[in-house]
Length: 299
Image (cartoon, rainbow, N blue to C red; front, side):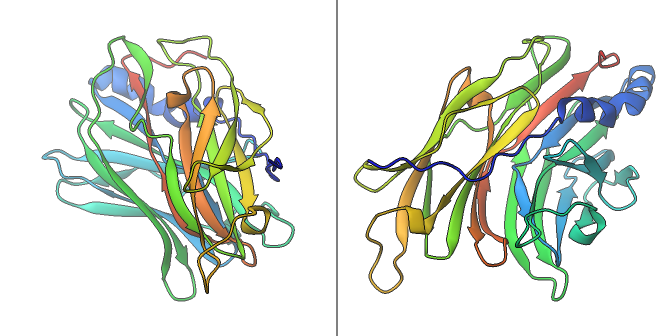
């Protein structure tokens, strides 16, 4: 079986950035008895002519303060809109948007695509409550949503005090159809150290793609993902030597990451990317919650 290696490897130093997001509010949280956490959404690509939009709905009886950021593989982070904290009233929702043109980075040489890792900081005046969040890549010219991801988060309180990390969802198998002219991109984010695991450890492994009979079609090279960083693995349809459906050459495949060190902690996203435009046309994944409870995060 021929081995296929991912073309792109992306790295993000987001652990410190996530702490900075709440460093100032944290002092207020301790004084006022508030609680807060960060939602880290699946990684997604953004191209010129698009904006990335996060929408939060507050179904609770009390307001929630929210602030959105996006982390880039080069170690930079960018605020959505003017970067201010928004107060979302009960029964209301608010959208945060960031334009690809407002991110001063070159991106992919041919398409201008950049890979981002969005996050939202939430502050409550009482116990942590569920919120509903959606993420979309939107065409600036006509407002069309090209990618939609949503989920309702109902977190549980960590067993330990201080900061902790909870991952929702345990699935590691993804089923998708891919056609000529598309690339399958798998992005894995290894969360930073938590209260339960203060040292943090890298997770190493690879990604495999299988056909419907369980035959291996492609395998990435083995890579290590340090805490607070993410990597992307690409598989072009042309490199998957499998007969597709008649008329479309669509191949239905199963994608599975194989990583050590508690692989369930890895935040996963799977995208279908248009090779000509760099646009993400399909996105699947799950969210991650990072809790900061009581006290200022340690440096």
